[in-house]
Image (cartoon, rainbow, N blue to C red; front, side, top):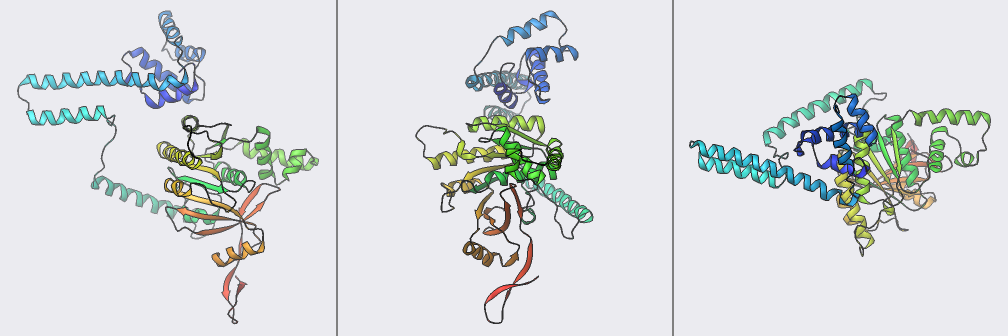
Length: 447
């Protein structure tokens, strides 16, 4: 754990201080955990400094004991094996304790043998299956939880009505999506949700993801982890600059700003400085690496959402797998990550030329929401959308198509205005209602 961030994440996830027989090693594990969760790499120097400050390390012998342990370096790929060995040893000791306990009960001579066997078999099975912390939930517990949940939601709704700018505004259950209509339908991206956003190459996947990040981190003040597989640091801050400052992205790239624009842009960046945006560049991600980094971000920053930009950069889990198989396995691993870490996860994917998603049927099963960002810049495409949404909006050039949603109706279109020069995406404003004219021809009427 002193040599590798990967080892820290895997060990902290798989083990606890109770898995160590030596009290000193148990305390050492807790000390490393405390240092790591503060965002500090637990090196030997940091360990000794914190240990002495807390009074944990008191003698030269203890320092030597730590140094001796730290000399045993283990490659990252073997961490799982050795944490497994520690866990096995811990279970072995737990098994010994169980056997001693039931041997004592038998020796007393007054035990109910069938009852004793039943209890012993239950505890041994639980230990063998590693389910000592898992339990069934009864109807009573579920019903009581339902009562509490509904009461909290009603209280939250009423409080939101008092605080809301607009009557009928609904409180969110998750982080904001950045789109009022999608917020109203979904009540936000919720913990455990897996959201798949698809778009064709060059049609706004990253812009949408960063706009979502702004809604979550800046507007909503919630911590978000953005796992970037393609952009350099210069590219990502330039996009942020355009979104926040309202300046043209090309001007920010070339530096052709007036003094006034420069001042406005630097001021705009303060929103990012004061935000809860966390990012990391990972050009060749694997599901395991994404899992480890997300766990670290959850541990250190208590993130409420992770965005993976984008899934096409993921490495194959096994050689010879077809692309749809790769995507299916990756999406499954992302769903598990969302549920295990209790965060919302958005995965960006590329659409084919016909706006379809390769392996879509299999991937859809794992997702709570499938969104498609589609261009409707030509009149024919726009009229088709207008006929479906039955409401007039300001001039829009994109739509967000809700292809799947577990909690609300699918097949919905949300008109968007995508300002590509400023990398800004917002929901188009409704300006009228759809009416049937006396001639029988449909048209737009005044709102």
